[in-house]
Length: 230
Image 1 (cartoon, rainbow, N blue to C red):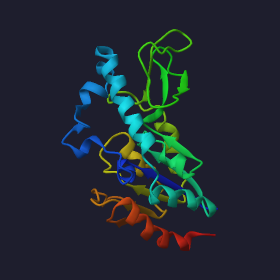
Image 2: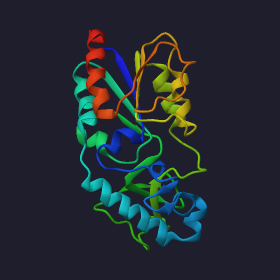
Image 3: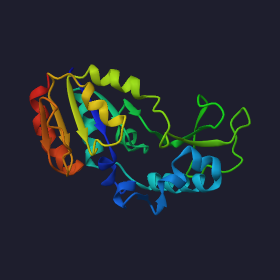
Image 4: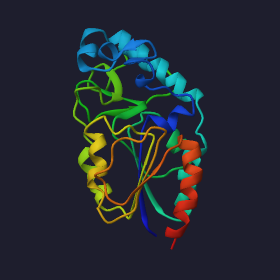
């Protein structure tokens, strides 16, 4: 089987009703990013940050995988599929994809504010004040906030480097370091990008643009991918 590596951004989850802060001129559901998605915000006000992510978690639980998520899961019948996502929701997993790497964390998990290796599943929508890790530290959302390092980046680069095919869905390719992943795809392999607004990718070799939403674009991509099935 050929190895298809897929890099997904907020655009694939938008059609499931999950908004991105770029929908509202730098606001995320009426919150300033600086107030809810930075380490400084966490140190300043645990309660506000926790409440914000509780709302996002409830939104995620109510959302359903869309046809684009489902199509990626179905491709596992014909390809080795590795998904690398910027998204913190679990819609890829719920659609049936088996290999998903979350660059920016996972909304349905918490971690120790003292020891980042202590990670816990969250049952339901809420993570509250005074919920502590086994070392007695407040649990925080398992999210990579703005200004924090991206621990999975090196592993993601290694996966992309081994791709036979590379697909980008719903990413503006402006949030770094994640946006640099496309640079690690071997120059000789076929590459595709699906987005209503195709970013500047003229320097990328062997790439085809599909100017469409994730759901419509995946329908077109499924026709393109047939010739690569072994």
